[in-house]
Image 1 (cartoon, rainbow, N blue to C red):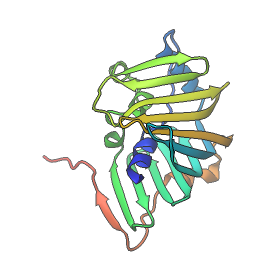
Image 2: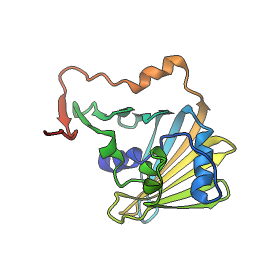
Image 3: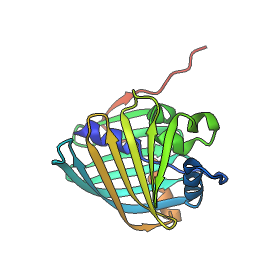
Length: 208
């Protein structure tokens, strides 16, 4: 279950600024360009391929440009994911362990890549369709861990994110009490490694 939740969260969108065109992809870019940052509470429901609820949860979710996000599941079991713009930290308090990876590793072959890169070559790796105020995003690479992400808006406000993995599990995030990041909230994107935890450093090491 932890793996399902982690895959889901690492596929959540971060935002960047861009110009508008005419396709569904460009309409989504325009929507995202109107959001510089956000902080919200979330309720989460995970269902399996038979529409059986296998997990519910709640917590706090935040995003800020560039490439920063914060996901804190507070119930039923605490876990934390922080992207500081360079690295992604995944903290499991119960297991007393922290995993860290390059942000490019975390977004590789995932719909999140569509939302953090503005270059045409990255966008060309995904299919984007629009239905009313929702956008469905699916990678053309069938080896991706997440098969589809749907993001929905109410005007300029992001209200819902629905992620489907290759096993058919669906993670539905509904956002509430949403507002722009305040100055004091910027500390959310700085992860301090707790004492006495195991660290699994998965960051790519550059060699000469």
